[in-house]
Length: 607
Image 1: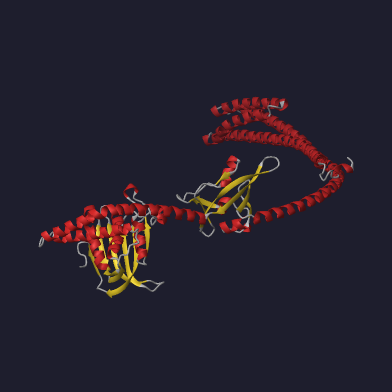
Image 2 (image 1 turned 45 degrees about the horizontal axis):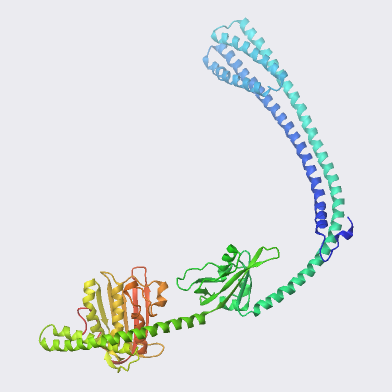
């Protein structure tokens, strides 16, 4: 290969030549090592075979020695029995009898591959059988000298045969052991020679290959450095462009991890680019549905799934790092490389919170305008029958003088007057010129609770009132009763049979403003308001009662409280033993008389 082949052509390395050089630089040493490995493996296998043969011979010798010991034990026991005729001497004879048969079987199996040893073992088995026959006659009572001499001769022959068998096996073991030693030495010499030759060849070839590879690598590094500098300049230009865009931009790799954020995206998400880098987009760009508060699928996942530009769903909220929220919209698009493969996703979005507020305000204004026109029409139609009803109640009161029904008629007249006042307000959409005056908050609260006591009794709900002080409030008594009526009505709707409602009144001084006024709380033991609905309960036409609610009660309540320059807030719990909702309102007042604290139920209210 000529050195000129390795030089870059048109700014690019000859990749085919470079790969071939790398392959040859590593292929030859690997081939040498593989050859040496197979040579060593074959020799080691031969060593293992010879070692197995040596172990096999040791097993044969050990088994033959054990056979000799067992036969000697039999002979010793037989002699003792013949000499003393005591059956205790026959115990080792009988124990060895069964084990000798097992030992013969094992030896026949061990020498089955050696015809010579197999023949010798057969002769030993035959000689032992003859001795065993003579031993049996000795046990049965033949103690003659002639029989004893014959048994001894057979035993001597048996021992000689066994010794010859063992001697042959020991010779075979020595021969196999010498072969093992020779093979081991041959292996060591072969391995050393192969390693030496291989090392020399590898060293010479590798040195030459590495020199050529080094020259090619240096050329490649120079080209890579030029390309890297160009990429850095391009990336800097791209980052500057992205940071100058007015919309928020987040770029992710194909795995959905952030690689770039511009300044607008940092401001909207609350994450700095250095902190967000290499984090999953779902961790930094947390979005949910503005209405249901459900988690919205990441646009990156949609792009990865469909491979096309996708837009965010309507009413999407971005949850910032500090927990703040912003309404956003826009889209995500795939980043495609020159091969057509998606290598990342770019997400662009903008803050539309102000626009959403403007749209919501316009929608509310349209609703309120419609409500104003509707309420004015209804109030106009209701006003005439109410005047007639007022006159009828006046006449009825005159005719029931001294009757127990007179208080009820008087109370009905008060409520009808309040309804008439509400209709007059509706005609002016709460811009009437109602005259304000000082009134007793306790008196108005007692009247309102008394009105709802019958409904509470029928429903099985306990009404409890705690009046810790009486406060004179500067405002409209009718509107004050309307505020309490809306809260009590909602509390009764929320409670089931066996529930309870507690109304409390006390003098209080606001911490921030220092104003003195009446603090009223209305607490129920109902099911509570779900957390997802709490932010909307003061909005017009929003109701949690389904088709039975108008969605105007709490909205009107807040309007009236604010008209009296007061405040209203609530807390609610849907789980646990102390579930339910508590509304707390504050109305500025002029203190008249602080009465002694008392607690009473709906049937024992303060006069």
